[in-house]
Amino acid sequence: MISLCMDQMDYENDIRALLMAFFYGEKILLSAPEWSHRLTVSYAPGCVRMVFEDREGNRREGEAPCSLQDYKLARNQVKRLTYGLLSAYTNVTLPWGTLTGIRPTKLAMEMLEQGKGREEIVAHLTDKYLASEEKAGLCVDVADNERRVLAGLDYDHSYSLYVGIPFCPSICAYCSFSSYPLKVWQDQVDAYIDALIREIEACAGFFPDRYPVTFYMGGGTPTSLSPCQMDRLLSAIEKHFDLSKAREKTVEAGRPDSITPEKLKVIKDHGVDRISINPQSMNQETLDLIGRRHSTEDVIRAYGQAVAAGFDNINMDLIAGLPGETHVHMERTMEAVTRLNPASVTVHSLALKRAAFLNQNRELFPVAPADEVNRMIRISREGAAKIGARPYYLYRQKNIAGNLENVGYARYGCEGLYNILIMEEKQSILALGTGASSKFVLPSDEGVRIERVENVKSVKDYIERTDEMIRRKSDFFAAHVF
Image: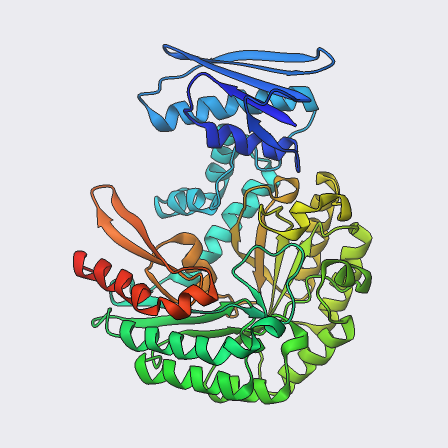
């Protein structure tokens, strides 16, 4: 237990994020009476002071200039002081240094757009934010590929369309998404599709002067739907949205135990050109532990069926740091994946999400230490290179293993455009369905601002309150001009 004691709450989230990074998996509470470690933060005019200590009397302390009137400058000063104390105490350096945000590539992208070169950007990230040269270089590589993929995109006349399917064959131990076991909700699936089609019909006219440049069906597991249900839903989407100009149409066929030739045919017949088949691991004991309820043979079978159905842009998701795994398990996984030779591989570092079963029952799920997860990440990068896949998008999460990152690797021309757009926040995304979060990019005095309109996460609430979900978006569009 780590106690965080502050005399005022400025930059609490930044300090907490660094504590999480150095003490992965530890609980952090404000002014906790019982603690193994304690960080005390006090602000004085022009200065911040910190003391980090443990019950054995080990102690690190320091202070730094801190002008709270300059938010960005003070934030960096507070984070550097926090980082310095924790690094000195643990004798650990973090691969991303003081960078704790979700989208570090935005920093590199901004500098590339300003005409800065690779060496200058790497130096900036290592000097100002204490990032390692490895991660700073990765950041620039990703931003450079993103810029290439986004070149020529007409943001003023396009948007992205997301449709969410909240059902899964079973719920994985690490999952915190709005997902519901199909076996329990089987009788409500048609009612959900009815409600979703109502939202589709009502929202199709909100962007009269724009077209969807990407369409993405996620979840949950969209291929939990039957072939008939999938056909009905995709037909409704095509009826109300003009997808003729879309550069990319993706359906997550994530769970191999939900994939059949009949479903793949329906998806292909509707012009979907990109799917994702996600093993997460190719080690059977891991799949059993985390509740995947499919075999490694199912992954190979589903992949072969997708190729036979004509799909040549297939992504595979993996997770580094799953319970009980080491770099040896990642080597096995990458060997199996490279034999399949997908167009892209997305590698996630395990994140301990608050609502996930894994996080609430950590004694059942031993997770790998940070250095081991970093080793897994390197193995996955080497495996991606073997199939000609380069890093093209990157994001990070709170409480992520090893303070690392999630990276998408793809062969040239097979990059997931939607993935880049949702990370770089350069384009509005209209999101429909349970748990969907629409993200609108609006002009502001500082360039742009992001506003969100959320749908409810409960399937029951969504079915009963579809009109309210429609009204939320309708009211937003009535109040804003695009």
